[in-house]
Structure formats: structure tokens, C-alpha cells
Length: 423
Image (cartoon, rainbow, N blue to C red; front, top):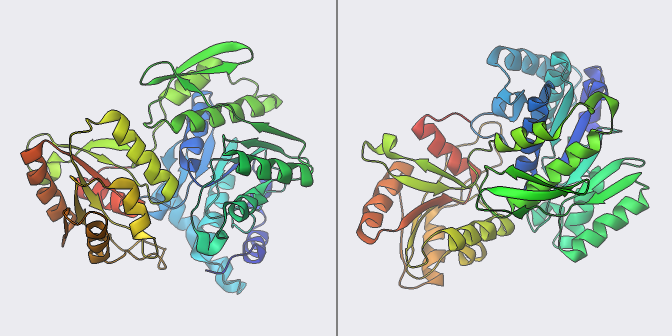
């Protein structure tokens, strides 16, 4: 992939610079970007603002990455703007990548819809990402940083952190989610070096009970419901709320209240990430709940394993349905997940629209790696996702085990399509 900002700037210039007419919250990092943008978006919608939200990668199709008030842009508007962007790209011989084209479409959509505010997720990295075109965002956010895309961003956490910090702006306001100390210091140094006006280090919320959290806001306890699963959501929701409190200092967003924050967080949805769903409609059987998660890197899969350890009876085996993107360190990732009494059903996933560089790894490699970790483990590759589910369900009924599908968001999307679910 050819990264850089020259093409996207050229394309946006030819499109009359829609990004310069937007009020923007820009969200980078490794994990948690989608959750943070979803919390922020939901709060703003509850407060009565018209929002645009851009997330990547897309889930079911490119259109669902572009949302107005939380709903994917309608097909007619999307196609009309897409056709225009592609025509401009072709006529000007810009040669924009598919992600750059989609980013331009999103910004044109938000401009045309005259949104009050746009919440923009960084695609990959930061400094050279196609979303890094906003000279003065309301706030730049860095979520938790971990090891991912090392072949592009660098082989060390230091290099990755510096690349992610490339979205920070001189005289800008910046929020850092809780980080390990070494990463936090790098981010703080970057903020100081480029002369950020203000930067804030978030204190994680804490659980009051299994679904309700507490933060200290302006010296008082503030309790609210957290609908998304996983302890890492304490970082994400606190980061989102901190961002809302910061933009509330602007006169045009001063009407946001604590009630809006509470209602917005409690209504947040982020499908396909640490989610229990019923797969019985696909199988024609009785109620069957499985855990799904688009987790695909070390931090996310570690969080998935931690959630299972804390919320599932430890004597129950886990029946894993796993598909991964080509190029992953399969053995490293499986070691985070697997226990000797588990089983593995390895699958592939469908071609990803507009992302021709994404390929699933051979399921046999997953099977071989699983057996290499636990030689007595049951592991097999399945021809289809449906077959993997049927086999895992049969096996789980014999040992009262839990079924977990993970390894790639693209695999989760395939399951959504099979179940005819909407994102």
C-alpha cells in the first residue's frame, strides 16, 4: 500500500475542500477507536446535534462506514457522491487509493448533509493516514496503543506510538486514553514538541457493578450504564466522555448536559465486537447463543481471553471458530486464546469489497498452529462457516462448552450476513 497525503489533498482540493467546512473530532490509536467514536456519536445525537461518523474498515459494505445520526448514508446519496468523487479522481488523474476515495466520499457526504459535527476514525497509523487532513480539529484523540500493523507502522511500540501521534496539531487540544507508561510518555512528548495547546490524560472509569460505571466529573461521582462488554470499555467510555466535556466548552456545543451523556452512553451500539448473538435462525434449531468478536491483534485477543476468563465458567471448554487475515502471526495469537481442553474450527472469510489487498489465511495453517500449541487439541478446517458452526454446536452440546467466533471482523461480517443482521 502506498501511503501519503498528497493524493487525498489533491482530491479534496478538486472537490472544493469539504473537510475545511466541518467541525471534527479525530480519533486515532490501535484499539478502541470504534467504541470511542460510537460513544461520542451517541451522546451528540442525544444532545440534538446532527452528526456524521466515519469508521474503518467498513463492516458489511463500504456504505455502513459513513453514517448520519448513527444510520448508514442512504444508497442513493452514497452512489451519487461516490460517482462524482471517482469522476473527479479520474479526470484529474490523481490515482487515489480505494480508502482515499471512500474518505473523500465520507467528507463530501458530511458536507452535503451539513452535519453539526463529524466524528472521524483514523484508518491506519496516523501521520500518513488519509483522514489526517484537518488543520484544526476540535479535539484529537489517541486511544489505547498496541502492537499491530508492524510491517507498516514499525516494529516497536515507540515507532507505532509516534506514527499514531501524527494526527496531533499545533495549538490543538488532545486527549490520550490510558496507556502503558512508556507509550504515555512518548505521546506527551509529541504533544509538547508540536506545541499542543492542551492535552489531557484520561483516568479510566471504574465499575460500580457488572454494567454500570463511575467517573469523577467536576468533583462529583457520575454513574452511567455501559452497554458494551469488556473491562477495556472503562478506558473507552472515559475517553469519550472526556472528549464531550472538552468540546462542551465551545459555545455551539454548550447545551450538552450530563443527562445527554448518560443517555448517550447507555444507548451506544458497536456491533460485532464482544457481542453475544443467537445463531439458531441460521441453523433451524433451538436457541443457541455464541460470543463473537472482531478481535484480530494481540491487545484485542488478550482482552477477549480476559473477558472469557472472568465471565465464563473456567471448567467449560471453548469451541473456537477462527478466521484470520493473511500475514498474521497465527501461533502468537492462538497462544493467547487456546487451552488444552478447547477445540478449533478454522474457516476462511469472503472477499472484502473495495479492499482487494485483504486475503484470509489458509485455514489449514490455523489448524497446524493450534495442534502445535496443544498436541492433543481437536482442530479441523471447515469448508464453510455454516459447517463450522454446526460442528461446534454438536461438540458443545456434549460438553456444555461455549462457542466463540473471532480472529477477523471480516469473519464476523460473514456471520452477520448469514443471519441477515444489520449493522
